[in-house]
View (cartoon, rainbow, N blue to C red):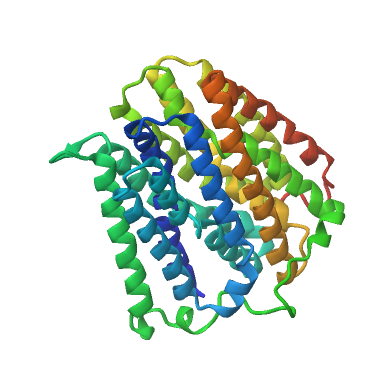
Length: 397
């Protein structure tokens, strides 16, 4: 157990750090190739599609592959994808590299959340998931900030974003090689067993769970939250460009956002254990809607930095809240694996369409409009949460 937790935490920091570097680097790539928000939306949509489809194999991978091999495969995809971006000659090939690099993101998180939800005390699940997800931000903070910093410079005529992609790709491949070829005794029990133990025959998802109110309502709330929160960071660089903020300061805003994510996951995870995921979710969605309007209207950089920090808390910071909310009705490991995978697939499907739609709207109107839409949908996410059964949703005290 300890060996698995250690490997999950380390790999989570690397996986999330590389993932959040993508939108920062993509904004520079888009400008370099003379593209716009529409192309950015298409690329992100296709990338999320690849990640979502790979996530459907969670049950199979978790039951048949060793943990270090699963993590090694996912980081290898990052490495190959970043190398493809670094040597891309057009936005088409750069987009292919983005799609390849994050294709294993959903698979990793589905498998990790299934393991944690199945092997943790229900009364401390929020704290457990909060600490695990916070480890991702330990990777996000340096990776995303450094990517934004490197991308603003050029060395011997090479754009900074190519240098950043080359460096990150090499590091990811090195980590993958270490996982595949490290001595067995270094990883102890993480080497010998699949991530979760089979609990039922077959690898087919039980979508019939959606017929049950206790599973359907949290997943609907999760879908609406995805529309209201998952694109905030992706389109933040374009909002800053519209406000005429120098690109050299993008790393500062990324740092503020990721620090907020880190603190939010630890704090929100503990709040869930006391007040329940339902109450915590409702309050966080109301705050999200208000903050989205605020960052859209704000013009002073120091105000935007502060709002970026708070947005980090109520977007990525609420991951333990959502995971606790959707898994709370599940009574066994099989249901937990299914509901996490189904919810991830639904959220991923939304994230395939949302960047494409938002990119089209921003290119035809103004970037502010998509933040208005996000705020409205975040408010709507409160409605299914209000309809959820209050029984067993009020925490441990």
